[in-house]
Image 1 (tube, rainbow, N blue to C red):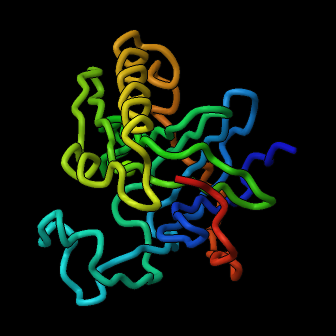
Image 2: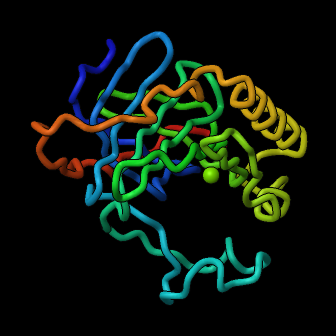
Length: 212
Ligand code: MG
């Protein structure tokens, strides 16, 4: 059953059964191509942060992923985003906008195949990302974290890593060709002004479903 336009959906990232990050969005479209959500500014979200309050990037790579973390409820900062997850594919694309609504670029998040449940979608982040500017110039992001985490317990294997990178390359090619989702769809998107605020569902912490 596809979700209806305007319905709220919980999008969770986690692994080994536990949610690390979660956000709430409203459905723009849900069809054979995939699911598009609007994540409004100020929406409630769950974030995982270092227990001692330091920023993740302050730690060297070797310590960054083993340091104790806590989950906390915060809100989505900055302008809203459109997030699109394909019906089949190990990625999602996020549209970023400036304060004035101008389109800033696409963030390609490489992630595990999405698992859908009644009111949500679960996936697992794979560290490696691609930023694609409005003129479709691509930049890899977080290659150091990706290399560090490859082969670690609960993460992706070295052979998966090759496939993950290949998926990123395919999307860079799709963007260079100006094909969907990089064809201008949603680059001038404005949310329905009638939509009210969204809430974090009380069962946001139910067991997380996606694999590495
Ligand atoms: Mg990522």
